[in-house]
Length: 129
View (cartoon, rainbow, N blue to C red):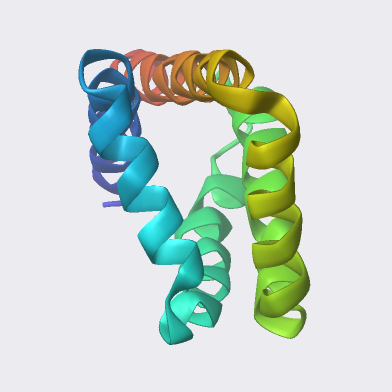
């Protein structure tokens, strides 16, 4: 059951990354609206819940260590957003202003490539099991 979650998580991560590459302006405006929302703190809860199963991959899987590290990064990011949502919002919006149009586009592409890599690692881990 855990490995089906990993596959689903990977497909969602890959799909979001692909959407960020295909329609970057729409995805960036979606991120800006989401970070500006009063409910943004929920993003921290979602990160903790979604990342925790990645830390539970059996050690018999050859990709258990990379997935464990990815899971830890996701889980440890959650509390910062949960506890300091306003500071994270401010940092995100100031970062976009500082980077400008081209810089923010490059940051979005790097984020998309990272998400797609995570998706591929999850899918490969599923099929190696």
